[in-house]
Image (tube, rainbow over all chains, first blue to last red):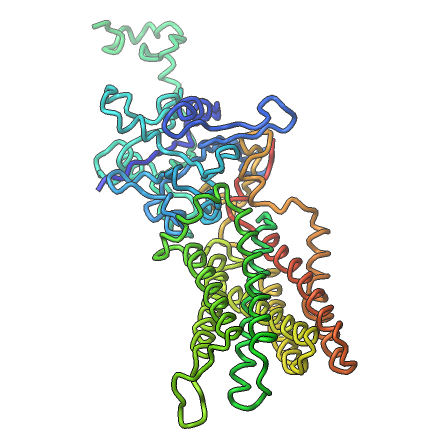
Length: 240
Length: 326
């Protein structure tokens, strides 16, 4: 069975909010739209968003790290928000595992948002129905698009490729390999919701430059001193 | 959680309505066993049931203010297999129908016994309808409480004490209301209902204070660490991703000062438990027709505070993601 999901690399995300704005841009005019705003230019602006980029600080100053943390619906494999819905408006698509809301059935009782530990659901104050990330269901299932564009808007917008999209049930998909080989993890595993979206952890990236590398021709900065005369040309210095 | 007044009124009003119906039916069963004098069908059972239906209907009306699309409310009856909310949506009107039938049977005097058990106990329509209503009433307490108790990550609610509180608080207010109703109608059942009102109020005080004690010491499973999955002892949010408000910052925070919360927690046990018991005791001594009414009014005001605090004290794990604007 297919379970589409996002894998977000926290080591790569720079917190630019491009995924937030591209999500709003695509979805407000798409199947899930409009995503209404209240007082967008007023004192207390508010609005419907499917995706947020938050910022956390880890450690004690001066030994702190900044973690940019994009948060959207995690499309849980065992979603607690779906069985609590009294009308059946909230459902999980059996063919690709995307959790969606039928806006024509939703009565706006907000009970599903209480049942989501991640705060992934937001009510649309004007349309008075519950909205959430659709994983751009109208893009990823649109066979008239070229295959490379059948991806969520946030994935296409990410300038650092921090967001991967694919089937986490296919062991050889890009996302499954990333989860397996780069320590992908789920949020709040204590609730047994089994989120399909995974996050890749922060890791220290260090480059070690040995002194002899600075004097070799493969030094990309070309900052080496003149070659020691005694050594003469080596194989590395030959232009092929 | 943000305490929504629609839900506060819904749960307290139907709790009292269910309790009042159970009190009336208890009176009928006691009179069947010759422990209490039989009462007039219209003035007592029918009128009392109508008061219960009125409370239930007011609660139902209040619940519609919670919905974004009340006109689609009928759809909420469809998912009874999985959703406690859906089960409540079915059970509440069914219970109201049973109470109305019970009132009609008593008012029209359709109490000719269908059969007589051992020449002693006449089984008539009111007894059977009342039994069905009593079962529905207890089920409704359970279902209403399970809407909250079933949410496993709202750890303040996810406990059998929630079910006990909803049931006992409903019974306490219902039997106190029955005492007030009897006193108002001049029926000699004030002492009987008042005693049960006191018993249920004291039992509810035990479970509710128990849940207050438990919730004050609760250690939540979710932390900022598990929320973002960074294994470090110090994880603080610096920005939630937007400067204005959002549904997430409104729906899951009570939006009051901690001092307001402490005041409500201090006041509601007196209004809900202490004063009604004192007033019912005084009513027993003075035989006043007004004091039981005052006891119910004070207890209902206390229940509004109790329910407000029930919502306000529950800390939703999603709040871990909304700790700092910027």
